[in-house]
Length: 165
Image 1 (spheres, rainbow, N blue to C red):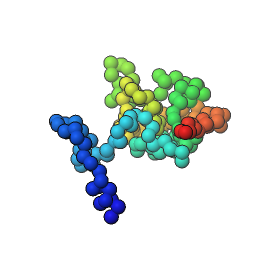
Image 2: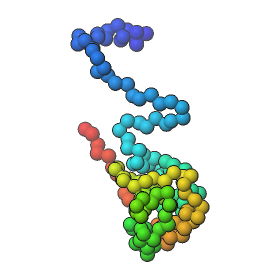
Image 3: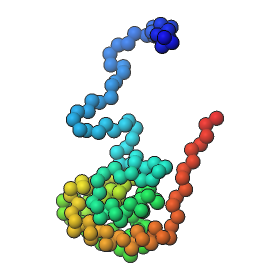
Image 4: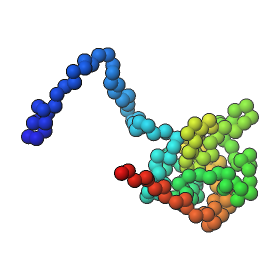
């Protein structure tokens, strides 16, 4: 009853609405997931106070290695991991599909769990492209670095929201 009463009290604006002043969100068909407005698909929107949530289906070996790391740090710090694994980016295995003009264009951050680059220029491998051999070799290369970083470094502090007054 109160809603009916309120609707009668609301007056329509005196400004005429012409043309397409109000746009509707795009229509998605089939099994497409609708991305909320304002979210970048490459940011780790799966991050919550409860821990890390995978946005893709990673290879089981990569998931097993990276789960504790991502639960603790919520992002991939590849340079730090490579430093303590005593290897370089060029030492990591490659997927031939992502090599262009002799350069490796694979985004390892995405493959390992989360690419936080807003405008990442690298290629994000689909889960079907990651082979068992690639996943095994990648995990073997970075495992010492992952283990060392997990044992040595503290998790980042939770960001506090500024209180609005």
